[in-house]
Length: 224
Image 1: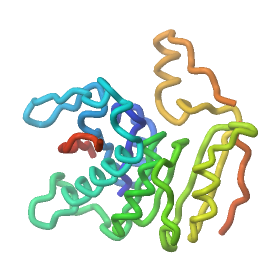
Image 2 (image 1 turned 120 degrees about the horizontal axis):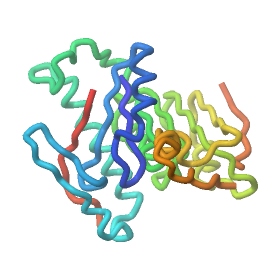
Image 3 (image 1 turned 135 degrees about the vertical axis):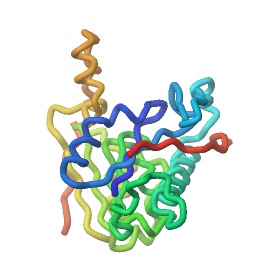
Image 4 (image 1 turned 180 degrees about the vertical axis):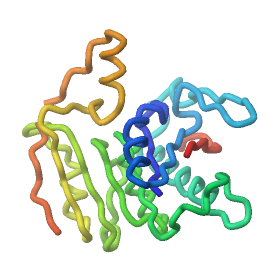
């Protein structure tokens, strides 16, 4: 199973194409909406909660948001693999020993605190997110971690170079030439269909060498 987390203030639907592609390859995919962080999260009972953080995003440190998202993910894992009352009727197909997390921007960066605090998560992928919560000094054990980003030229994200040195297990750092921050989501395709100008690409991120107050307390919504 793979849990996907969107960028800050974005809905989970921005990663629909990625989720569908992973599902077509046999993965169970859980797209997580982070309540109070996007335009609206609607729960099964019809209640819709709006974006509290959007009113004053500077009031919530990104480190606290990443930690909060890690708790969201662990909550979703608990709900989906509960042996008594799983939240999904097909939960029996989930392999409890093969759980990974990935996401875009802040959603990708929050893979680090998720893995640091939840040993059930065995792999992580960060799609172009600055990692405000650093990789622990002792790394993430021997669990694999991948960083995928757009080119940034000489202005390398220091949180990525720091993370690279701390990761002890299998790791990869990939850069996609010609991509930009939004290019790892569905937004460019949707913008093109709607006639909205595509977001301007940020300056190149060269590849690194590869080797084998807190947000309000909240419920989480997920789709599988």
